[in-house]
Every structure is written in structure tokens, then in C-alpha cells.
Length: 458
Image (cartoon, rainbow, N blue to C red; front, top):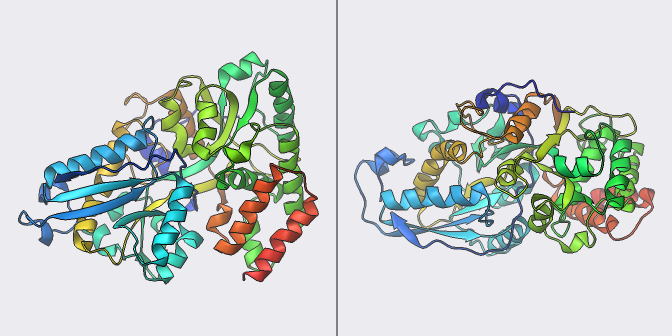
């Protein structure tokens, strides 16, 4: 259960995660390929990243492409990116910033295509660790150490967080968040079904699924067309059946294999959820944004997702009706205060940008203004930068304060699968878990499939 005796200060809440944080899948939304076509001119007071470049106004006309994954107009992130880019263009009339806006999976596919032709946009989105390493190894991203040293930007990030976006002491991206996976629940739907409190064990969760299903309520929202969503939920179960963090690291270190009992037990438990009817019908044909909207429109009782969704939930029809809890123990195993830890997707700069300095200048402005804008938009819970401010005094919701309290309880956790394993092994995993939504499989065969992929792609 959630400990409601939490501190209200954003700085304390976010600092609790600090170097414990690992990797994230990001926020998947609708496909609205939106592009802004406004413009703006260097102004040192506006926080540009290079002092020498901003000593005097420039009339050099440049157009920058900012690829992003914030297409849902109902979310604070949609407003944030547009308000910051609009402000920069207003202050810098010579700079035009075009937003290339996609959902998460579409952006990943598009970036791979762009990378193959070495046509990465000026700013793009990447995930940390294993997912961004191939782009770094190919020389596609520019180091950002010089940009981070401007205007004190580096010091705004939580201790250790930039390490997950760094290779050979060079930082190649700056993160948009630092999140934990939680289970959001609709208090009204729980009450309607006669469920007094969120489940503290997986067995209780399965019982709640049956109760909700019998009442005609979708128990767990998900959009598994974007396959990371099922994986992210599955990894919570593995974190429990393994008795704590480190299963994938042990596989990488040769201490365990995917045929370990802990992995097979996790597959069994996950399939129990599917077979109990926990998820929407046709889950694999629903994208992540549409899956989230099932919860945000009051049609599902629970949603297991990253804390980055807090602001979007507060801006949705179920605002004021939602609480959050830790993923429960499984078969008596695991510590609920160990989470799937998720430093967010991050902003990287193309090494081949025709306007490299101007891009860094803008990204420095964006990074320095980001925590202030998110706090203003009531969306600062779970960002990766230090934020000074009292959540309650600033008018943050009870849900936001609830989530901040969960941050304060974090003891440790694990990476997402696709930010730990190489892309080929990760793809087999994502497809394998996605397939479990369609048909029941022998759990030992699923484990064997994972191990074969790992050995083939070492």
C-alpha cells in the first residue's frame, strides 16, 4: 500500500531516486505528425548554450528539426515543447524550429531509417544504455559536454543520471525524465466493484481481475501494439520472482540463463494475468496511447505504466479519482519498494547537423527552462532535474503527491529489457511477450526462445 506520510517538496522526492535510476521506454502517444513552422534570434539573456555565440545577435537564418514523442494535445508535454520552442523562436527571430512529432514506436522506426542514411534530425529522441549505444558507435550523435557546461545545465540533473547517456566520459543525450513504474488505479471503479484497497500480492491482483471482469470493467489497460508496454509490465513480475534486481545482469555475466526458474515463474504469472482476462480484447491491435486512454477515460480500473503519465492523468477525465501503488509481491517474493526504474527518453543532437552550434544553443535553453516549465504545468513529478518547490503549495494534485511519496520509498530496481540487452535479443523478447497476449505458450519454451536469441546475438 502507498505510504501517505510523504514529504511534499519536489527536490526531496526526486533526489530519492538519484543514481538508482536506470532506463526507460518512454511515452507512447497518438500518431500526429505535427510540425511547427514559426521562427526566433540569439539572446544571451534567454539562456543560449554558448556564451561566445550569444554576445551579439545573429541574422543567420537557420531551420532546426526537433523530433519528439509528445503528440497528444491533452498532455502537459505537448504544451511544454510548444511553449518552449515558441518562446525561443520569439526571442531568436532568425531560428525556425520544426517539430517532427510521432509516437514512441513510430519514432524509433523512423530514426533507424534516418540513421541508416546518416540523416538524423538536428535533435532526436533516444533511450539510454543499450538502445542508444549503436547510434553512438556509428558516430551519429554529437557529444554534449560543452553544452552542459554552459549556464550550469549539468548541475541541474540528479546525481548519476547522465551516466546512463554517456560513453567514454562523453554525454550524448539529456533525459526528459527519471521515472518509476507504478500501478495507477481508479478509486471509483474499485469502489463500484467492492474492492476496498489495491492488491498487495499478485494473488490478490488476480482475484481483483476476476471481480472487475465479472462487473464488466476492464481490469488492466494496455496498448500492446507498441510491444514495450507488455515487456515493461512483465519485467515487474520478473523483478519479484527473482527476489530482487539483477536478473538480466546475471544473464549477461553468465551467472544465470533465461531458463532459470525465476524467469519461467515470471512467464507463468504473466500468462495467468492474460488468461484471467486482465487486458482489453485485441490488446495487440491497440497502440500505447489508445491503451492509456482506456484508463484515462474511466473504462479500466488499473494501468501499469511509468510515473511520467501522472500529469496526463491529472489532465484527463479521471482526474481526482486516481491513486497509485507499487507492483505487488509475486508468490511471496520481492520487495514492493524495488521498482522498474526508468530514466526517460532523451534528447540527442546529430553530429552531422548543418547548424550544430545553433542546435546546441537551443538545447541548452530547452534544458535550463525545462524544469521550470514542467513545474508550472504541474508535470514536474518524475523529471530528471532538480526542482525547487512545494508540490502542495503549488497546487499539485493528491495523485502527484502520492507519486512523490513512492519516489521517496525507492530502494532500488531494474532496467527495462530493451535498455539492457542488445537490440536483436530485445526484439525477440518483445515479440515473444507480445505473442503471449494472442496464445498461451509453454513457459519453458518461451524461456528457451529467449536463451537461444541471447546466445545467437552475444
